[in-house]
Amino acid sequence: METFNDYYRVLGVDESATSDAIKTAFKKLALQYHPDVYKGEDAQERMRILLLAYQTLSDPDERRSYDRQRAGHLGYAHEDHGAVSHSARSGVAPAPTRVKKGASDARFAFPEMDGASPGPVEFLLEGFTYTLWPDDALLLRQQGILRGNAPHPRAEQSLTSLVTYACHRCHHRWNAASNGDQPAACPNCKALDWSEYLLLRCAHCHAIFESREIRDKIRGGQLYHPYELFPLCPNCRRPQWCPAENVRVYALRAAEARRRAIIFIGVMVVVLVVVGVVVLALARG
Image (tube, rainbow, N blue to C red):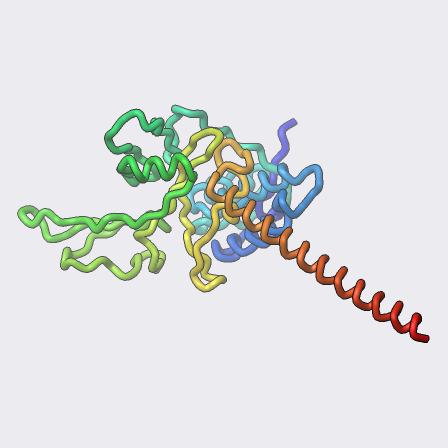
């Protein structure tokens, strides 16, 4: 019998929780149960469920759909208030169908990036058309991460003075006069980094996806690291999918190992000095 997972209980939030509360709860639990920290046999499964819960509840459309499914499972009438359900119970959710290479899914793209073609790589992802020149495509393929800024759109002066902007945080689109200045913030979600994008590519299944979060407001606008948002690949659910992050994590572990070694050596030196002083004192006595 297929079980149903209550994503609100998984994250420990109320069904009326805001997106910020959901994000905060996910980050806290992801740090607690990341396979590098939590050594239980169910580490991978815990992270998989946490990631599914976060991805579902942080997307307004998916959250509305999930709330209806949850209400039906629990036998409660569902009231759709934007992205919030008013059901209240618990359970366990079915694992989503994974997108295979070549399948059509707006959240993932699988362009050919073998480097054989000298031209740019173009693909459609969540309503945005990306054109990567060979150097950017190579960087994304080798490192698994590509940060950039959407080019400033230009209006066709012969047709209209308006240009269309699109926010990479909430995917809101709006028209504004082309005066040469890029809007300071998205009029919908108020994000100041609305034009920045973060493309990620899995080294295992080669799925390309976009992160809607780039900077951590809690840490003063510092850049997120992919593992903090996606401990497992959202498509194939495998860890260590980002080569650039693997290198960073390895460097952090090596630095921590060196720090512990220095502390251990320092403690041993102090112990030897103390023992030497005691031995000399006893010899003189």
